Amino acid sequence: MARLETWTSKLRRTNAKSDFQPANVSPHRRKQRSFTIRLWVVRHARFFEWFYEKFANLFLFLHPFWKAVGYHRAEKPVTFVERQVKGLLFDCRMCGQCALSSTGMSCPMNCPKQLRNGPCGGVRANGNCEVEPDMPCVWVQAWSGASKMQTGTDKIMAVQKPVDQSLRETSSWLRVTAEAAQEKESVKS
Ligand code: SF4
Image (cartoon, rainbow, N blue to C red; front, side, top):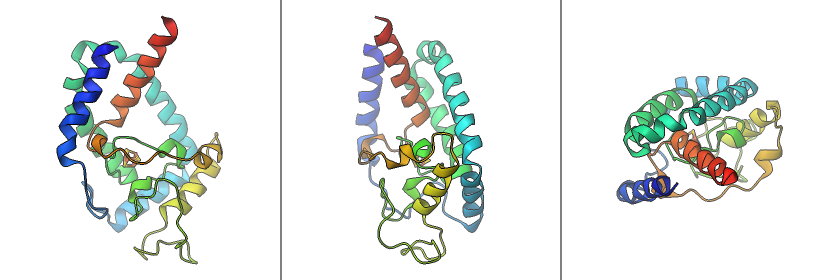
């Protein structure tokens, strides 16, 4: 458990140098193509919710493996894969603290204002963003996706914490797994 904590604090220190990225900078620059995939994912939010649950369980099941390899060693390759997969599906910005399961599978970091609790008051009448008029508002999409999910709109109503910039460019998958494993171990002891 102590090793997991050390790994998390080490990650924070390593990433402190490259913490800030302007809203329009993404490892996967926004394109119309991305909107199409992103919107398709939101339309199928219920499936992705189900799939994510299975995927998270598999990652947790592999905890002994991550522990043996070392979470800090797994960080780089897993982050690479996470960036590719989530970049394609969600136009992920690698904030390192994924909120997709609370936001109807619509990534809140695509909001030009980077709102973790939205929408703002500037949604256009056609449901698009006031800053990027060609882009559907990520929070309108979030509500639509959340309405399709098994958990419904309960999670989207919960207030999200501000983004911790020190976690940028780190793997959300590994962090969530490490936290869940830690919780499981503390319940046992
Ligand atoms: S909430 Fe963060 S980790 Fe999740 S898809 Fe968006 S940028 Fe990526």
